[in-house]
Amino acid sequence: MSVLSGKHILLGVTGSIAGYKAADLASKLAQAGALVDVLLTSSSEKFITPLTFQSVTGRRAYTDADLWGNEAHVLHLSFGKTADLLVIAPCTANTIAKLAHGIADNLLTVTALAAQCPLVIAPAMDGGMFDHSATQENLAKLKERGEIIVGPAEGHLASGLTGKGRMVEPAEIFGHIRMVLGRKGKLAGKKVLVTAGGTQEALDPVRVITNHSSGKQGYALAQAALDSGADVCLVTAPTALSAPVGARVIKVTSAQEMLDAVMSESADALIMAAAAADFRPTLAAKNKLKKRDGIPQVELTAAPDILKTVASSQLSPKRFKVVVGFAAESQNLLANASEKLKSKKLDLIVANDISANDSGFAVETNRVTLLFANGTKEVLPLMSKMEAAEKIIEHTSKLLE
Ligand code: CTP
Image 1 (tube, rainbow, N blue to C red):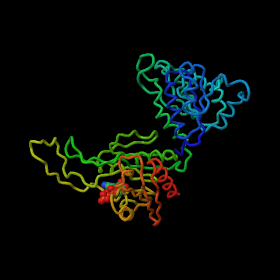
Image 2 (cartoon, rainbow, N blue to C red):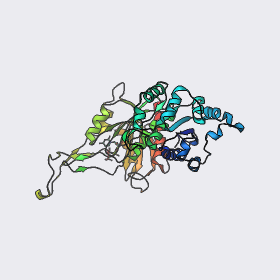
Image 3 (cartoon, rainbow, N blue to C red):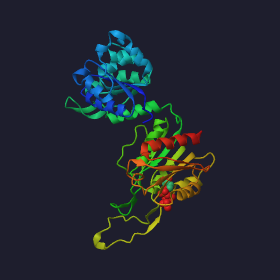
Image 4 (cartoon, helix red, strand yellow):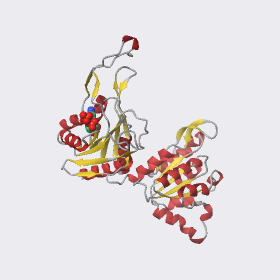
């Protein structure tokens, strides 16, 4: 994952039962290619051990015992200089208070004071402690300073009560970390609109006509655009996926709704990865079609072609400076894609051979060819949908230059 690979992340862990979730976060970061140094406070060691973290990061984890002796008296300074990001998850009310007031009495807080990198804080505590005006004032102070506070979430608390205080899930903290790391990327200050998923066209209140699109490529594109610092709007048809952290999401069902959503926005780039319907039932029955009434004869009508509508409405200044489309083809891939590139007035089309079983709908990988409006093409080898997304975003940002 390019936004995290080689990045030096400091993960501070403080005394909370949510410490076990920090091991999952450390593992996710390490798997994404980050160099993760974990700093445990002495209270956190009551819940979880340095060995747990060493086992998932492949690097030694640090405790307050490392604060003194050998070269360790300057450990916090070197951490503070080299780190790309410091995340404290879980972060107790006590550590939040220390951070707010610049108290530096253990390896983690001394490092936080020396650090010159962004700080992400994931609070974890009982509801009453979170609601306490001291904690609220401390958090307000940290926010004002530009620190990123993620959560806490509502739910079951260690006290047995329900309320706001649970640390948010590692996947969400991970999403915030990549957003912070990407914010100075090539698309910083640019807006990207991505569509994803297969639209659904109603036959009656319970039945729809849809297609096999999983939305994976579109969601990966939204994530890759966020990783490059873009402001991302994701217009999505129903999928089983969670939207990337940081994307503004507009949920739609039909091609008409997707068209309305796209035409209500403007952006530097539009990337139409959605499999929007080409046909829809002329009339959706108001009530459920009953078997006893016989097999229905469904008449179909053309659904709106979103890219063609965009192309014919591009005034000056253009609603979208760069438009990227996809061509899902089971035969004559390049000829069909090239025809769509012209008829839909695209800057780039991603030709996708859906007849291959390792490419296209539902699978994790894609084998695509990029065709550009200037007649050039780039054949990409089989790669994950995230890698394909990163390539497409790289080209989109070049087209915007
Ligand atoms: N598309 C669109 N509106 C539709 C259908 C498709 O804007 N109603 C977009 C897709 O998001 C994609 C591009 O058009 O970026 C090509 O989609 P594809 O399904 O490959 O082609 P179609 O234009 O639908 O033509 P056909 O199905 O006949 O191949």
